[in-house]
Length: 480
Image 1 (cartoon, rainbow, N blue to C red):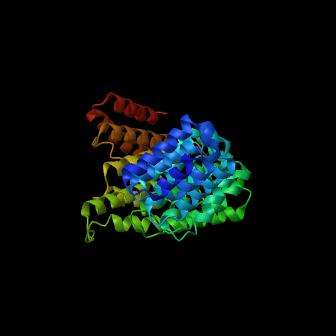
Image 2 (image 1 turned 135 degrees about the horizontal axis):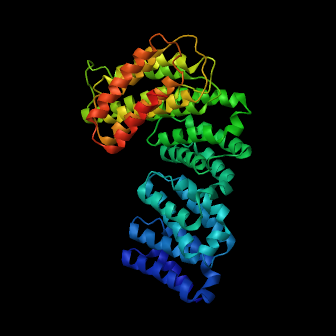
């Protein structure tokens, strides 16, 4: 072995042809597996030697040496293995192109696969970096790190064990001059939130929030909608933090509004969805006016059938605007806080009805838009009918207006949409009967009979048994 080692080291350093290099990597694997006892004293030096060899311009050679590093990790000392981890991290974070990041992924995966016990013994060094890098934008790099994570970690909650280390790693990279690293860091922080469960403890929330706040401050990039989804998730799961800290709650509200105002057309539909979901989650405040002032002008512009289409790709532009319209009207519905009684949520219904009419009558309104409107109508009026709202006057015109939006008598659309329409109609009628729109006799019977006639007509032409059953429930609700 003493005679072989210098010659093998020299061959690795000086070989030019690909077959020779592949052969050298194969010899290292053979020595590490079949002659581990006599080769162990030399494992550290060869592992260090591979740091240069693995950077070969030929992908097959590079992958071969990365695989060899995995086998050598079985025999190497802890210090040498820690050096390999540090080398892989530097290779990844200092990479000027995706090739070096791929090499880093190959090395880490090889260690986890061929030296699993050693990998697990230093899990706190490996796993936070693996979790970070599995959000890389390059497919090969992402896939290798994802396999490493999934094969060595049990369950998403394992993220909580390394939350601090992952956050420290990610936050430090949000200021990176490399856009790929910066965006990967933001997506990592988002995934930490998503993996933290439906209830984040106060201490964990306090640790996560500064990182999430910094990630949200980045300019729009492809995938930032995932950070927004994490923000909404944090709002729901991290109440223990912002309910105790009014300053954080106020800042979170500003962030939701700021993101919805960004001008990136591809990002905007996601941003206004998040604004609506955030407003819905904040049951302690009424955000309808703020949400309405942001979204109403967007919807007015998007549904303006007279405007000139200047989009280079008309189909893509149309699709984006249709999504914007659907998400926008859903967000405004969500912004009606049924649990906040001062002012009464009923005061927002006229504006909501006017906006809904404009959306439904537009050519940008699709089956998806109508389905979303039916779903949100059902949720809104189901919530309203379950609460007591003081009524000093009658609002039957509102009940009729929202009911007419459903177009129950028309019976158009696929069965799924007609079913949603019937369920929305049922909730509006339930709200009407329970006195949400008032209890004055004047005009009540007229409104009731008008709505009932629409349902009777819709029931007459309906074909699907499931939808018929829902419409029958609507008719029965009128008698209550």
